[in-house]
Length: 200
View 1 (tube, rainbow, N blue to C red):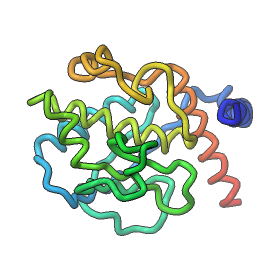
View 2: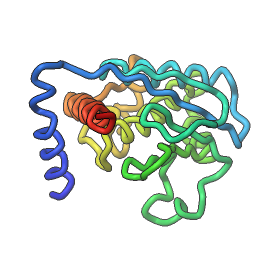
View 3: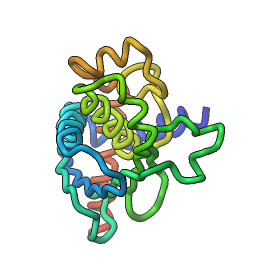
């Protein structure tokens, strides 16, 4: 109930701005650090797929396979491929999580990818493994772009993908549900409005 109320408030807060603009063009720089060995071709395929999955929201991802060295910015995030999940993600609640993002965190935006779990998850998909990883990355970036902790009943932002979803993931790709697209656009417009106010 609290999440739905927060979503309603967010959508209402940007309604006046959104009525005059269909979407917000937004460039997000993703700085990737590899603490675990990972195939370069898989990474490039995953990054390309993630970019395409989020493109319908007018979000452009620019990938930097180097550590993040800049100051905190709404237009940049740090993504780390960890060897194993940290202790905080070895509890019964999140022992199967493949990655994690923190939409409510202040300061630098961050995503952690748990390479050991991802490697096990993608093992059955062979040459299509990069497409699956791309969906994992896009899913986590989606959480940051929505700015709220939630999952959808269908599409890319579903909490757990079904066998049918995974079939789609390895073919044409599993897109964002319409509401997720609307929520991302609304949050980006809100961010832009807050940035303008802060500069005044």
